[in-house]
Image (cartoon, rainbow, N blue to C red; front, side, top):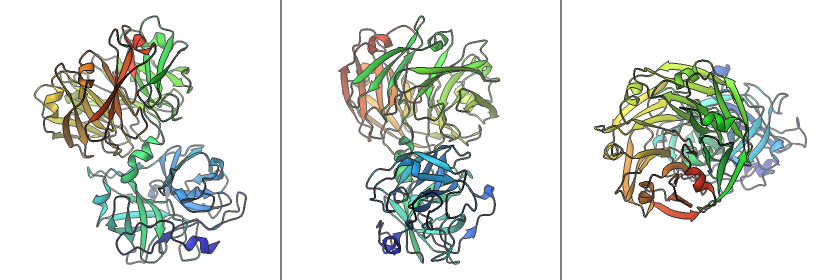
Length: 596
């Protein structure tokens, strides 16, 4: 099958490397342990000799087909090339069964999947692009983030290529090697890497492996995946697919915030009123209509109705379904979590969590859900009380328990304690770790952002943003979501009487924002009637939208579907029962990374 590997499987046609051929797999026998030589290992590559020197590369095996490389981007998810998960080693081939895939994080795993390799449980690979992600079990710890820059910013910079492929034209698969290579050309979909003075270049078996950037836009030493190896001529040049160009796809194919049933559409849940014994859920149908369930849930509705209880939504066990946690009441020592079963029912845990519930009961504390360490499990942070100099974070362990950090953070806690400061959570730099932004106080002309470093600490920016802080100070409700589909969360405002626009601050990834303030039909009027805004991708187009619910007498759920440029298309369709539930005193609508 050697000849099949020599054909061009993807033409990036970038610069002088137009003759690139796929780093594709060599075909092997049928059965585990019979995998043939892996496609694309770094020729003349430097051997990686310590686990600490591997930011997140994994060996990938398609049993009976061939072997590749990949990146561990969540504890349970591997990013690789599509042609590494097909039956014939080409991007257009048929996707194999998920159980055919193996992955292991090791320095020298060899040419066949070793014992102890994680097994694939789900493959996601759209046609027309040589990218794939697959879920694995058991999970693997210490994932790497995504690079937070844009593809054009890679030109004339150096990336660190890694892979398990061949070390010569014909031999050497199964050892992790690396080479620092220059990016000599870019396009909207990818970039060309050129061999260096040592003759290092990607080759067979390196397919799907990462091109890392060793620093981010803020200058932090946070390694991020910038490219996925896809093609190479094995001598002078290789072609990588751009991770920044598919950042939203990579993130939202793993989990859509607010998606209670796993159909990749955000839904809306309700909890909070005294006397409730259920959690109503409005499941999005993708067109502005919703299907409603109202199933009984043990204990949890009672927890959320207690004084100062603040429910938040997130995927706290990493199964791709949105769950609900609650914290805040005085005297609590636990964090109750209602884990979604995917059908409108929930399974409840109520485990002790060290000091965090006490922090959450502090006057002014606002719980903020998000994946702050990038492991694929949502966590809960706190900010807001006067006098605090830290941001406590409860990192989810995936089973209803949490590990707590409480690291000092410069300036941001003081900003958050100011009157009318409204914190919102989102991945504002697109690196796969959620951050916290603030807006709302009178007189501000900046949007402070605490960018997560992944370990409970944060790097803070506080940069000028034209007009937006003034809009936010008019009593507006702030919500965060990826409104243009670039994989970075943005901030939108709605609610004040008399508005006919929805201002949006689109994140540039470095603490600055580009602002639009465009007319939107009807929706601002609905929002001014007391509608509670929630954010989610309600139609599955990789752009977040805004829905409203809550006012008495409503029989519909207005949705502003983002067009990606600061404008929105609005629906306002009848929904059975749910608007009445949402109008109940104390009801809190939850979708996306909803903050109180």
